Length: 231
Image (cartoon, rainbow, N blue to C red):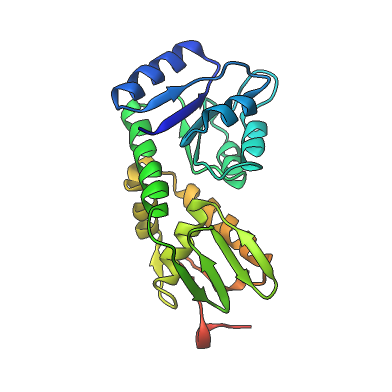
């Protein structure tokens, strides 16, 4: 049974989410103290976190940063605000998905199921090392290493990278990536993929690999290697 930690101060919404998710056999936990959310997180050890942006004292972005300092647990943001920067900020902080309020519970359930399936079924695969562009990718540790250092990626970033390098030097369409990452593109903003790919490329730049992921406008993305690299 997956444990879900819901960081939501609207008691009515929390109760409804708790009831609906419990019906889906999830073990749901809420916040006991909005000044000490990290203590609850550490105690619960959830498999997934759902977090609202607008919270008492500190906002959801703050708590996402705190959680990301300790864990790579998948995080889904909720927001009643409609500013695009909320989603961009969420993704830049390492969130796995974003749900706009008000939402239909079928959409939330679909996103939760897709995230858990992607993260935990994927993680359950045997240790797998792959080389690409002179780097070693460790799919168990979520790391990419070369002579310039080692970076750690989120599950979304690693999944995108894996999808690209499995088709290296070939274009992988945006629709294919969205469908592989989130199962149903009807529930995903096109900008969500863009933010995730940009974040992946920014991390790869730390070890000199940013140029190896190219955007093909109107088509998708490509992971370059060998003779396809352009200095």
